[in-house]
Image (cartoon, rainbow, N blue to C red; front, side, top):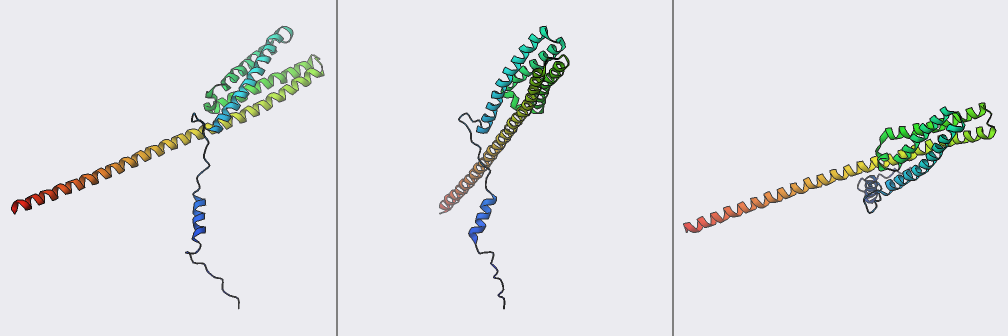
Length: 221
C-alpha cells in the first residue's frame, strides 16, 4: 500500500514563513548621498552632461569659425547655414553646462536632437555640394564621416540627457515622499502629545475630585 502523503500543518516551519514575509517587505535599495545632500547617481549624470557640453561647445565653435571662413571661399548660403546651425549648437552646449538642462523636460530633449540633426544636415549638404563641384573624393568622405559623427552624437546626448532627467525626477519624488513622511510623523507626535495631555488632565481632575471628597468627609467628621 502506498502511504498517504503527510500533510504539514499550517503551524509547521514558522521560520520559512517569516523568511517569506521578510522577503516580501524588503525595502528598495538605498540611494547614496553626498555630503551636500545630492544623490551620487545624480552627481555622476550631471558631470556627464557637463563633460559632453564642453566637447559640444569646442566642436561647435570650431565649425562656427570654419563656416565664417567658408563665407569667403565657398557658397555663401552654405556659410550662413553653418553659422546659424553651429551658433545654435554652441548655445545648446552652454545650456548643457547649467543645471537647468536636467529639469528642461521634453523641450530640452527636442532642442538637443534638432540641434544635432541640423549640424549633421550641414555636412550632408556639404558632401553633396563638394561632389557636384568636384572637390574630390576626400572632401565627400570627410563630410560623410562628420555627418555620421553628428548623428551618433545626437543619440549619445539624448541618452545622457534622458538618464539625468529620470534621476532628477526620481530625486524629486523621493524628496516629496520624505516630506510626506516627516509631516505624517509630526501629526502622529502631535496626536500622541494631545492624548497624553488629555490623559494627564483627566487624572489631575480625578485627583482634585478625590481631594474634595476627602475634605468633605473630614469636614463632616
